[in-house]
Every structure is written in C-alpha cells, then in structure tokens.
Length: 92
Image 1 (cartoon, rainbow, N blue to C red):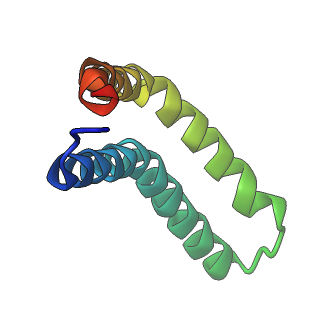
Image 2: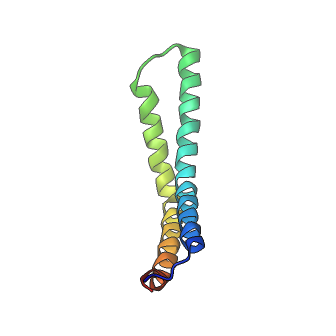
C-alpha cells in the first residue's frame, strides 16, 4: 500500500507544470517578439515572403536556446533531483 498523500502528489504535479512553464517561457517570448517585429516589417514594406516569417524566428530561438540552455538544464536537473529524492515516498 502506498502512503503518498494527495497533497504531495498535487504539489509535485504543480511544481512540474511550473517548471515546464518557466523553461518554455523565454523561448516562447523571444519567438513572439521576433514574430511581431517581422510582421511589422512585412506590413510596412509589403513583402509577403513566407520564409521571412520563419527563418528569423528559428535563428532567434536557437540563439536563445544557446543563451538560456544552461539555466534550463540546471532548472530541470534540480526538479529531477527533487523528484528522485522523493521517490521513496512513492514506493512506500
């Protein structure tokens, strides 16, 4: 029989969602900002090239991944370490 309380499971699920949002937020924000800038540029110059919308976003997200990658890795590793350290609570 497991002796895991429902509050513990809910708190771990809440922390997992929080970590997921925190890790994805910088990349999504940068993609949104670059997409907005490219859209404004396309609207003012009336250039409707489809690749112009995607290539700058891809490059910006890759650069952000290089910049934020160590922080993202340490955040996910600390969550995983916390999860595995509490593994004995799941097994009883």
